[in-house]
Image (cartoon, rainbow, N blue to C red; front, side, top):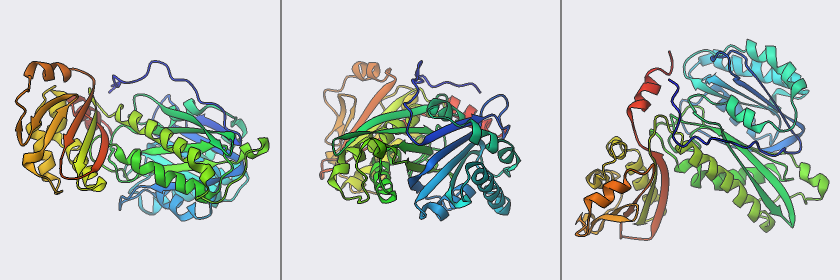
Length: 412
């Protein structure tokens, strides 16, 4: 099904080059015909690395591989394929992962432990390592600076557009660059990262700094997205810091608590938030992009749970698809969240329109005004709990017939 998100941008600019990063892509025939599905990234002088992975108890073989080697702190290569997740593939999955890492290591002239892997696509189908062995040597020779947009396209599965973001940050008066790419459209629910995302920077920072940057960014970006409440087996976010900016005088920082890193941490969070919103705006089959805000809960975590209960509710999502401001379904979702709530203090807003207050329909409610608001493609739903100071936001989308069609045909 050739569905395209109504939020798909008509023109996407490529990202600037990152010193020490070279990329190459190929059509390896892993699942798709006539499209690229294999990404190879080489870090000429190595990169310090941080990573966050799915909390799924059925994680993929590449996730296991990355977790095993993340403690080494450095990377020389990244290999990503689309079309096959190499998940729930038993010993064959581990064998394929090792063979891929060995082929990439030979191509990059490094140890397999310095190769990081990610796979996305169908679960339960064995992943043949032969295409990797056939292409990685050539890709290592062809890899060149730039090409991040091509890389983002290569890792897509049901995505209708590639997702890229870039920012600059100040470290001790000098500028560094941060680029990021991601894929994600379905099987998206916050419980770590909810898709694949790769962040690249020339900042001369340690693995501890890279890890701190993701630890701060993920909870307020990727963990605030839900399309369908399903957490993938393959969710991976990796940050690679090449340190190339040191060649032009940027100071190297190893201490993750150094105050000079404040701008860098903010920039990493901003690119992750940008990508997270793009993922929600490409939710499979969506017609509406929705931001759910919860305020006045007993804690931020309680607010987050209530927001997720609302955003994941099929009844709420289908009401948005039908352009129906059905606050009764919102009340239902608040009540089932299992968090402290006072029915008679609740207020609910669709955009700026308060539809319910003090536990009942708002006396100033206008069906015409709210119905007109619901015709917009980007919508905001706000719930005021009025029992504390906790706040949270979640980005989500509606649930349409197209979501069913996309997923009914996905494996065939």
